[in-house]
Length: 122
Image: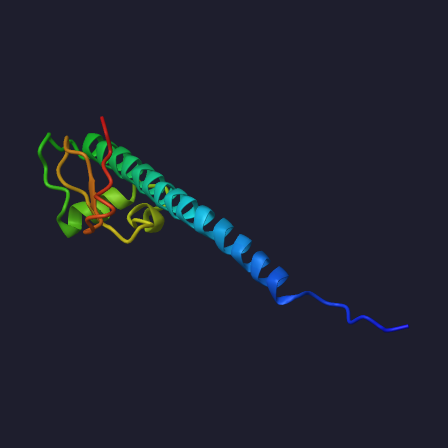
């Protein structure tokens, strides 16, 4: 009686590799979109925290509408009103957050064409 070698044939291995490649081709774009959406939502929440801190500072310091918040002194004062200032002032997508003025929403510019800046809607 002949002993048969156990194992997979080349065709079987190629079929498995093709199926894995097909699943990856379907899944990777979905993961990338979910990652981008998650980063955008985190940045928008950071912008909300900055806006809340700006408003609290403006009320406490009796600052009028249109006061520039981009100066170092004003930004340092506003940081005291933000719960977690280190993470709140960073964009997870690598964008640049600008505090703007009182009455104007803070903005985030990611600098990319594919991922436009994150916008805090009113």
